[in-house]
Length: 139
Ligand SMILES: [Zn+2]
Image (cartoon, rainbow, N blue to C red; front, side, top):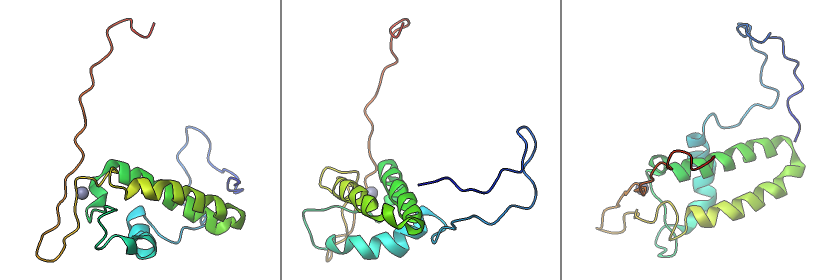
């Protein structure tokens, strides 16, 4: 993947010019949420309803790990649209992240989709405590 070739016209320390050049490779989706709703969910979450082997949360945006993994996938997907040779690599990234994302021990492990009369459940991650290292520990 190469960086955009548009030359910089701003000077360090100076504000950017008021008129921006159009992005060389514009994104199809304006946000990770739009990508999840418009592409990821219909394409990959068909295996979620009724399956006891996977987890998903309707409030995925309240799970930091899910946001991070989905943002990586979205950015790679958008870039691969402009670089066809990157598409196989994107699928490998997906095959890595998807089982973690929707796995039984993934970020949605405490959440449940609604099923029949049973309501869904959202349980944000709890994070274990960490203690600061003693002074001089890293010296
Ligand atoms: Zn949840």
